[in-house]
Image 1 (cartoon, helix red, strand yellow):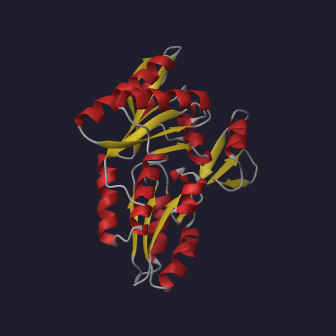
Image 2 (cartoon, rainbow, N blue to C red):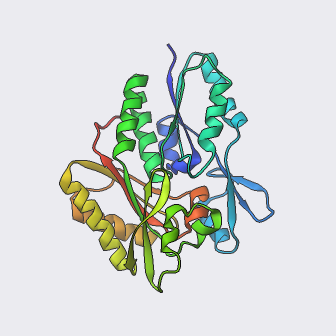
Image 3 (cartoon, helix red, strand yellow):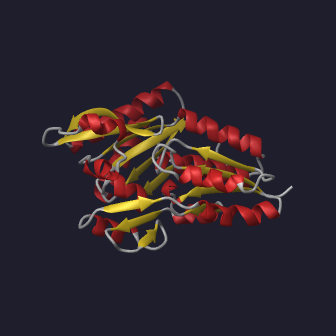
Length: 284
């Protein structure tokens, strides 16, 4: 029996040090500015440069092809490895379908393709837990059960300054109900059934941060949880949110990250938020 390999895509937005340390393979999506060449998310353009360009010109994105997944899967399948491939919501991207198409070309393989119904932080937290479980010696069934438990208990809340990016990229989902809001109203959004959904409207960033803290506090009072914090290009606000959340629940995040170029193209640079899930046993 070979190894258990954990595959995801670049929209997991995991810091590169964690990807390397936990032997995670992230297949890149691409971000495209106007008529320029496509940049592989996390590889060909730095986040700082990406957000600089996003302020000047809109960006579109594209999913990996089945051939790109096949290039990853095929050598491992040939040596008898098992593969658990966890990806961005199928409602937001065709990435899962590309992975499934690649799996179909290897009919005798042990490849599980999982639709996380999320993107960025909620995806990254599940992937990281799966990779740690694989490194600790858990088997395929145990890892899949862990991933499903995490994903089924994950909630995500995030603030943006504007819905323009989501609307422009066609990922606005049910959050279109918030279009045309008043000045200084910040949309507080969530994920539901793999789509971006409206949650509340808050007036100003300060009240937005307080509302985020209240939501995490309510969840923590109901049971043990783990959470992560993410931002696009708002480092000062990110530090403020981390402190506010930790003060509210009495402990810090298990993961912090920046929203990568593909997800960032659709939510914009101002995005900030958190995800949490039911606490699970920590792995090495």
